[in-house]
Image (cartoon, rainbow, N blue to C red; front, side, top):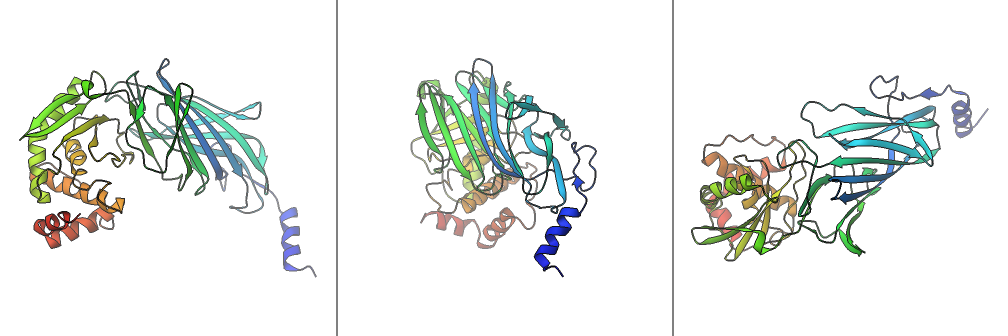
Length: 373
């Protein structure tokens, strides 16, 4: 009689192999793609062509996640809607790729890559995937913004926790806006390379990368009740400047009321125009205490959410999640005070919990707490 381990080996050897469908559009049972183990992504900004070139080195491995008898024939990656020229290579061999159409208005689509050979249990493959992200004008459906003076797009990687990295390569004439301290910066000739390695959770991590060539001379000065601001738009986007300038007075007063403390800055505060795709949680927490990002869309809440961070900035709170939740919920309260419809947070979300705490202690107590921060 065979020992249990030996019996398992024999059964795995003689059991029929299950082939996973090559196309996720018409899957055969079990129809699952092989998991991505590692994904190292390089995003290179090409100003001349108006595109971001993406070069992803992917490692997939059949580790028996669906059973040792399963033989995988494809894997999938998220890609920006509107990305083009998708190609995949196994060494010098070009592989078949297929785009799975995203739902209407979605900012992320799915790219299926067919492997050259069935990936059986215990095997792994190193695949290179490339594609381009074309740029467009502010408020267009394009997934990037690229000019000689301003660059913005969303970047991510793939893989298991800790198994991904992101490298962003831009001309040295441009400087990144807000990146967390776990990014490294290096200069390579005429390019600056921003690197995040490893990515803690590639399945959820998204960075809204923005970089610009700007100085005080490029900014539009604005004063509100003796408070000084400067607006840095995507070059030539006068419509955004007009919108932000028109909202500043009322939005500032509304935030002061729901937070209980006056505007906290005595110097000049910079408001930068940022590309922020609808439906994609990618907004970065400001790392500069004297500046914030406001989305390019001319909506009623963008300025409120951008300004709220000034009271709860990264230099004041150790726990970023708490600072962000306070800023979001106070901005929502300020919007409601102006008669602007706001979607309530999910009942089990951090925002709902923080909003309930502030409602319980009251605005005066919140203001007192902020006085000690």
